[in-house]
Length: 153
Image: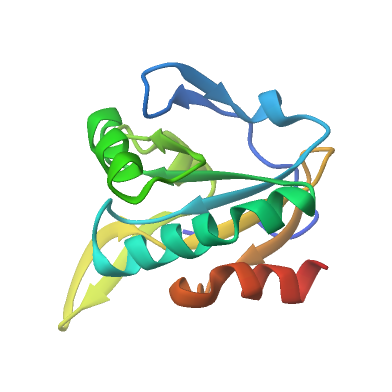
């Protein structure tokens, strides 16, 4: 699976978020979006990444960013994850993996010598015109906010 590149138009999507209502990329037209893809709610790396973004939420909002997380988990799983860690941003339930696939965030992975398909942890920063400004294919889960700000601010 190939990643989208900087300068590419971000694929439009509409999907369910944690409360069962729809969310679309077009809802954020005119705003900068941090769209991050992660494997699973409430696992160590995914929790570290979500909490790092949440701990720096106010600073990111002040810089003009909106944050959206995407994983193949269910709306109910996302709702519990948000409640447990008091996350202040939306999580998309991409159970059919259509957004993951459109963004190249679903593909072949290796663990302990075995190959399998799964979520490729990736973050896209999308500008106000829905163009990909920056791609983070190697995410530092514990310091992701600083990783983003170092590149863009």
